Image (cartoon, rainbow, N blue to C red; front, side):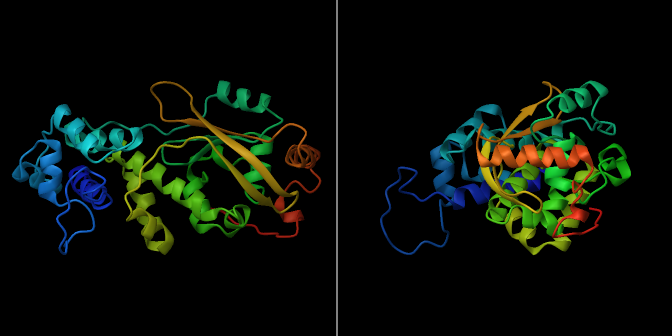
Length: 300
């Protein structure tokens, strides 16, 4: 995942989505060979030379200043996540390579999520790998997997793999799989800009590109955004339709681990469904999907 090549592709994809009218330029008509802004138009808006912008888009310049990146961000109307991504890509070649440790949830974090027993909670690493989940988080999102798998790095589930390669997960997002898939790819794009030298992340993206045409299509769009809050309807094999709001929080200011929490409206049928699922999970009855109507045993 060459950072400068990604930078060029990202700049070209962002200017392709903006029309001259949206950018405040006069369109004198005539046939245009590009769907959005021409390179010279973006250079004019950002106050840089066409030659310099060309070098950036071709991955031949690693010294873009913050002022130039800010000007490009404004001209391209990037949101906060996209602006951060642009800066990450532009500075990738200047960052020292880090020795990467195996991510894991600390005992304190595991105690914390276990204490939140009434809602599903999942701890995600920088590559969307599942570092931990509480009982309800496992039962809701991956009851067909071994609940101890997040604590064995070689068998650890990845949300990206589950979303694109696992039928159970696609069924779970029956009414909104496309939106979840797009959210996942945006998050991976953000991670690739931040950790472009991570071989495990590059391997994951390559694997998904080979095995999922849908991933390849979404990846080519160059959309980027870190995870945020959203409400989504799920269709769980044991308790039926459930509406949950998702909130994502960083565990600290340095690490990339995130805490994903899912909660239902108090007193709603969805809250009752979560309560039933918790009883099943804690009682050992039909908590595992293998006892449900869509039984599968699969490792992802």
